[in-house]
Amino acid sequence: MKKLITLLFLLSGIAAVRADEFSTTYGLGVVHVDLEVITDLKFYGAAEIGKLEQNLKFKSEIVDKKKKRSEATLVSGNDDKWLEAETFDMPGMLFTMRVIEKKPGWYYVMVNNTSRQCYWIRIVNGINFFTWSEEVTNCLNVKRKDRTVNTLRKALNSNSTVPYNDQFEDCFQVVSVQGVWMCVKSKKECADGTTEIKEGWFRWRDDRELLITFTPAVKIEK
Image (cartoon, rainbow, N blue to C red; front, side, top):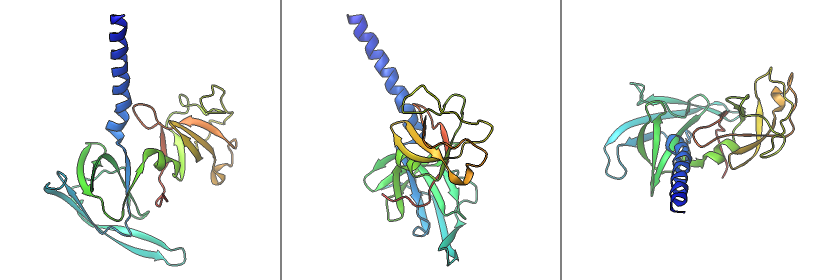
């Protein structure tokens, strides 16, 4: 009995480590930097009393008044290319970073996904946090990294796969997210030449990593 208890304890420890691998790499979620609001973003080595390490300055302007479309420009702060954020698309007004830790008034964000360099930023108007589940639920389109392993299924946790023409790339719209599973349907604008999927399920993450690539939405309503 003692050996059995010891074994169960070790196995639970291994499971906990594996479950924590995703949060270690990807964090708690992401912050969207609203480039219509934020013009000066400071990065600190520590919360509250930390040294100012980096400083990004932006400007945005309306490029199409009828469509109310704006574009942003990075004015200064990335001369040595230290920034390699989750998403950094100035014309698309999209700037997101992984949030590794939260403290009252502060986010610890990953500014370089390759080196995993992190800094602290203040929580102010225009810095909006979303969990990974919220982020992928509201994305514009999604596709699987490996379709041979992460098969498209007819129902949640089902072993029955959905017929799908693998000659074409994935092009799905997210319907809903339940845990690590995602319900999707074919996007209308890229359904030509593919089997139209009205509903299918696959995993969007496992214990270690994201199993999908996706285009984030610029604006997400809470």
